[in-house]
Length: 265
Length: 265
DNA sequence: CGCGACATTATCCTATAGGATTGTGCGCAT
DNA sequence: ATGCGCACAATCCTATAGGATAATGTCGCG
Image (tube, rainbow over all chains, first blue to last red; front, side, top):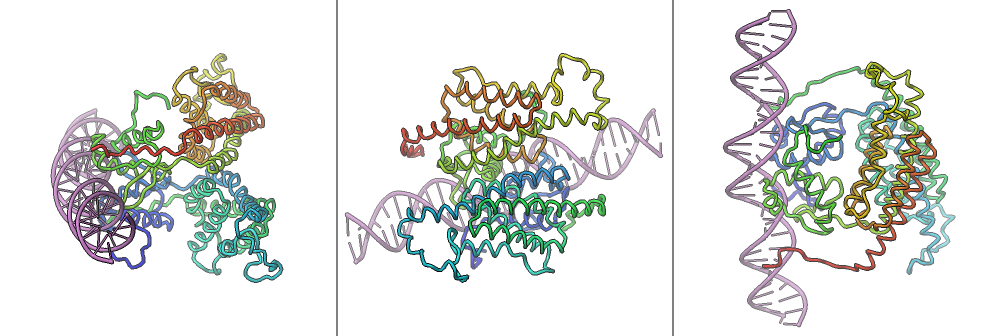
């Protein structure tokens, strides 16, 4: 029953159901408009109804599911073209600022180094060496993580892998902004966006990586305005790429209604 | 929209519990750090545990409650000064833009009246009649609602009444922006902010009303830049007002830990 | 042949009981 | 006196059963 060997954090069945269902939505295993039956899910996952109910309530609060009070839960439809543009407009308001703040934070930490307690010992003259800790302001670990997130996986990888890496990078920048509120606000936009990332075309992965690296470089070298502008450019180009793929998918696939009912015995 | 008496929408017990608990948090009937017992709430509200559980899951997803997996739910603490400033910085990114879009939308609707689809037949010759619809762009009803929301209640009213009116105005502007995504993003920030609105001082209600009316006027008269600037000014002044009251409250009330638990026995 | 009304079914919502886990208080040894 | 261990209690989590509601299929009529 218990003893899943490596579970550092407590994971209840509700959490398990939540991540499983969210994963299904992200992988498009649950298409928009599909109906989620509480009974069916409970039997399918071998859980009770209560954790399923809790997971559905959370997903509904995140905007991934819609609930009609006595009719059941359904997966929210994909964003329309107008909503999609609106979402990118909001990203344009938040994410460049987050990138700027991330770069500023590094600079501020550096400038305020004198106020840092006993951290002064970090003043080694290794700025020129391209090795481990050539970066000041952000810690080397933070810079490493940021760069790692900026890199996209090997070409040919699954689209899902790429989209997750993309989300990780943007979340990483948001976290580095130093504002938990801002990071949370950005993360909130991610869920809906993630579904549309599936429409990305393989050839744009390389462009994305270049733009990500430009943002990361500006942040690490503490150039706030450059970081802001790089993020803005990246978002604008990303919007165009997604929009094109989005329109293409919309025209090719008019209105398929795969009735994937709960025929699970 | 209107109507509190006529609620044609289905309301389950879970919804009831959700609104009740949220109201208690907003009214500070539940102080930050307080522990919420599922059993206790179920008995207190005369509901079963399931709807309580669903309501708590939703509130947790909104960030109002914190959940420790096998320990229970607690009310999230108030924002720190830094988080408070961060939140206002985000508002500064979103709300002025929303005001601008609201004003632009009115202008666009007016200019693009010919593009309006089949809405022409809904006019029924009433649209042309003057008097009611002296304002162009936005409908008269929308303008009325906006102005009504901009007005603050009579002086001496309860703080809660004022804070709710304030929230209504900002939500109204967000809705009028025409972007459902933007409105949702702004609404998401509201919950945490609402708690801090309780620290407002009575004499600032008048100032707030003046600023609200300035924003509303700019929107109705379709002056996008003026609306954006008015909202920005309002937010900046509002931030200063709240911050002052916030600091005052913090100094007067250093660290009271009212153990309102059942330690009576 | 189309439409409306009715009965049936499936599903959701609610309620209660039992198992598992965490936090707390007491006692004892060092 | 303080730290450790154990046991108790409280609470959460899970499971199952019953009532109520909406959707669906069928029948009869225009």
